[in-house]
Length: 222
Image 1 (tube, rainbow, N blue to C red):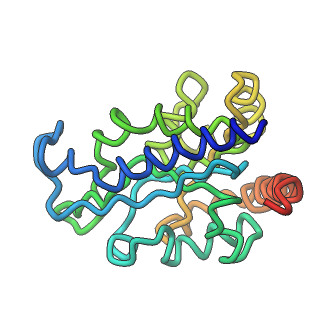
Image 2 (tube, rainbow, N blue to C red; image 1 turned 120 degrees about the vertical axis):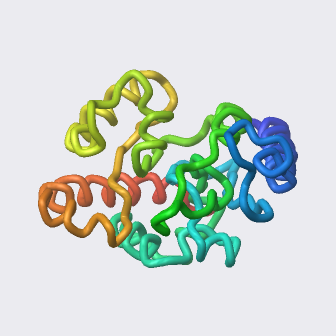
């Protein structure tokens, strides 16, 4: 890519990131039944050089407070799966972070997180990934992210889709927008799932770490 091309992409991403930071759609003009129950605080990391994108659900309460993605036990587990430390994980030159919902969606009547707001997907996601064509690997976490990034390829359930991870990577890469690796959510709530599906940590995690090492090695000096 020429220097002029890098400059152009950088300007476009900077403008897009500014628009996202100022987004108030779910509070002022929600497409759902109810507006966001608090002030918006969009959390995402765009990058013109990262080859890896983490595509999860939506920020939780801790991330809403900190403004920094994955500052919770789920983030610790995700970094362990990836085989990276916080220095690499939070380097925007190396890793982009684009959840399906940029803001914490609030809690349901049982105290669980509500689904990601639909406004984000409809307004931002196509634009974001069109502006980051250099992404070679998307780590897709949970049902909502799988629905978007593996549309037309996903299996009936999250487990079935994750179990078909190698096929998902090959099929998504063949579509020309980088490989997509489906993952379960790294939340402690999935401890039982991980215990019942030991193949995830014996088969998927080693491939994930090897792929990330290879991509990061080609990003050295960025």
